[in-house]
View (tube, rainbow, N blue to C red):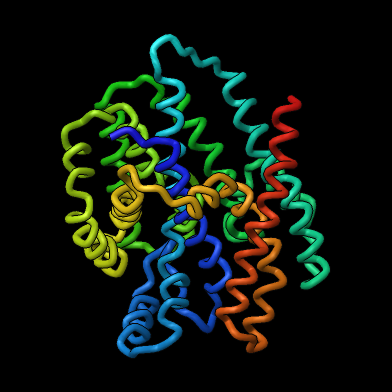
Amino acid sequence: MKITQEMSLRMRGVAIILICLHNLLHLDSYVMECEFAFMDYRVHRLTRCFSFTSGTSVEFFFSFFGWYGVPLFMFMSGYGLATKYERPGVGLQVWPFLKRHFVKLWLLMAPAYLLFLVAEGWMNDYTPDIPTLISQLTLTHNFWDAEGIRPGVYWYFGLTMQFYIWYLLFYYLRSEKVLWTAFAVTLAVGEYFALSAPDSPTHFLLRHNSLLWLPVFLMGIWMSRHADHQLLRWMMRFRWVLAPVVTLLWVYTSVHVSIWVLSPLLAVILLLLLCGGNGRSRLFGYIGGISAGVFVCHPILRVFARPLIQQGYDKFWVCLVYTMACLFMAALYMRFVNRKLMSR
């Protein structure tokens, strides 16, 4: 199964809407997610909320499950790297590779980060200290103080740079044994911490760095290398039969600690099934095309949207206006970033 450009854009579009609304709605008054550690009390609260018919059920869904859009981008990073650099006749030079990807991430993140600091400073009197500022702008914040990353979604930039380094050192043109060994070991480490030390600082730090997210990244590499695999062709042929089954499995793994580490993998498989085939969705395709801009811009607009929800304004209209504003700002922002990248 080859992921076409149209399919990739649709998947990115769905994923970024999940992330965008999740980061607006995961407030203390809502059901918080289990992204970096499995918390039983959060699952129990989610169960209670969905036990009653309520207009807030959709909001609780985005608050608890919306973060599953993030693994999709991790998967696409692995898929994209293998597709681009493992073709016959395509070489990879270490320094140009690292420089190119660092500059792309930095040009995408840095201007938006400065805009966020202005907005956050104005609304909440936030001023980062010098070490925090330097570590964010050098994409190294994950290593030192993962909990202090602000805005929180920007942890993804440091993690992505780590993925590029991992790929270069260990996975570029390496054998399947290396891939599957790393996959199994990282799943086992994640399972150990999820069951025995979910609240430990070590687990929290590992979940904010690349190690415990490697299975999703490696799945992307494997799928790129085996696009014609019979299993993948069979999966897409029966995708509408499999989609409800995978949905149930995904939800089940999301709320059971013993198999929680599998939930990001199932979330990606579900998106592949839902966005696969030859169907067209211009809306999600367009959103996917500016998804990077939405990712970096939505924390800026969230600074202004969250107080409106906390003050009791209608949540539907706040979410709608916030989403439309994110798309508009992202479209303008990506025009600026693309000009900078093309001028290099």
